[in-house]
Length: 345
Image (cartoon, rainbow, N blue to C red; front, side, top):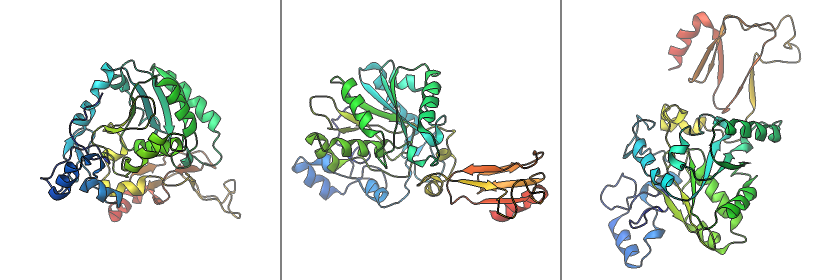
């Protein structure tokens, strides 16, 4: 079980401190002493969490998989080490994976953290999938992909913390499988762990007064990967066993590790993904029209993140991009592509 001897911020799990203003866990000395005197340190939210809750982008994690810009108070390796004790304990693991980045967020080395403990696999953010998506097909694909990982996965759930789809099924599975054990929510950084826990507590609150009380002091949600900096113990179950939010595992190959933190909100889809196609098709100029624009010799820029040079493309080909609408698609002849990119910087 995670140590609870040090008072921590209920929003991010960082140890409370009164010395370093810009560091995680900071609370002014007067407030700290007052809360300590009344045995209320568990109700303290640190200064960084308050700023994050108002939309500020404050990074804290450096190292391999962390961030080169902004403030760094703890390394990605140190965060991962905080989870290493789990493989030696008998716990129930709820592992979250982002459907928009399934392979990238899966945590290939999750066995190093979970050991042989049973895993409930929760796929998050299914509300972002295009409207025509067949969730049954997605579920079959997830199960097939998961079986190849050879993990002790006991069930798979497609969920949305926003619309609450699938959350009841996860609750039922947790209640059936926890058997008095603690429950740990694991996942890559920014996969939606805190949002999932908030959804979990919201759905449990109507039948469980313990979960209803836990809603008052729940983990902070933020677009900043690395919001949670230590295990956060949550009294969420009647009859034994605690719920733990955990620091996200930072992966060097994911978008968040290479894009500046201030740009992350632009790149995070907030609503259902809709395709943007090129060339665009109008009523007068269909993709089968002899006047349709060919793609050969063109370069496509998707914001400043992706460049595709089209060298040889079959006739009547269209490319469709799924992602944040704020990322503009630009097309230019390949011979002008370098000049176009430099002018856009």
